[in-house]
Length: 408
Image (cartoon, rainbow, N blue to C red):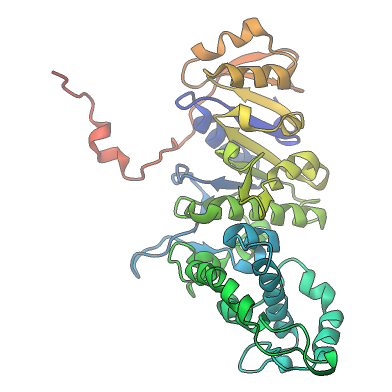
């Protein structure tokens, strides 16, 4: 099968644990490198740390010492949308959500018009409304634009400054502090401060000086001579769904770059392992929901912009049907679950029930390829990649690698 057949459209690598899914994913990435293409690998578990010739960066975590040579990067909070932040902090709909929205807007305004600040904040108590409202109208487009800058460390205090009575004298001024609103926002401000001061979330809210913005790393990679950029997420916590929100926001950023024509001349293949964790899911509470749809949108419209994807998953049943319908090539390893088998049958249109009955019996590395480049389902034995994926980076010398265990 040609590179255009496999990578010119979206590709899915499906298989239960131990069936060879990670081998195939690594092999596909190596093939992109051999063809001098560009692959961005999102590695949630860190198992592709041994890939040769790749730029390896860690989104999450920090250096253990000055001699730690690993490259840690940040995903600054400004790349998260308002909906992302609401899902993270879960403000109540009555008072907290409007005050949080106003505080974010005020801090973004101060970045554009710092002369409005008093002691670093936009103070509204007993202040005239007109100058601030006019400034908001002047800068509305910039405030609403993706990636608008603001000082997140001032956010909880700015929320307090938003808790004012809506009108004072002559209705031209805001009133004094609104005690009921202040009391209602106490828990919200605590959640905001806990996130900002969390060591685990520091790459988002308080990155170290040595952490470059991941969007800058991506831009440098696209213009450089390296073929593989691996973004390890193994140190990004699941706390408050931070990992899911960041990966979804990263996909959203890549799609925005695609729409601007960034990949028109030099196509990019984004490889997402454990894709079932980041597709067809919502995070947040009932009031503050975010649909994890960025990679689904890439599958639906990215191809026309030069952005294609390889989705690797052990749970095909968790991948939306409308996403799988956009996949040009399916590489199916051993599948044991009947629901997963049914999804493959429906998505491929070429595998029937009789052939699906062989899926649980496929050996390690054995697969069936289905797609536009294959006249009929094609059984294959996948070559092992040059460097085998492994979760534990020091595994080679551990007891798990001893040749034989004595069992009594």
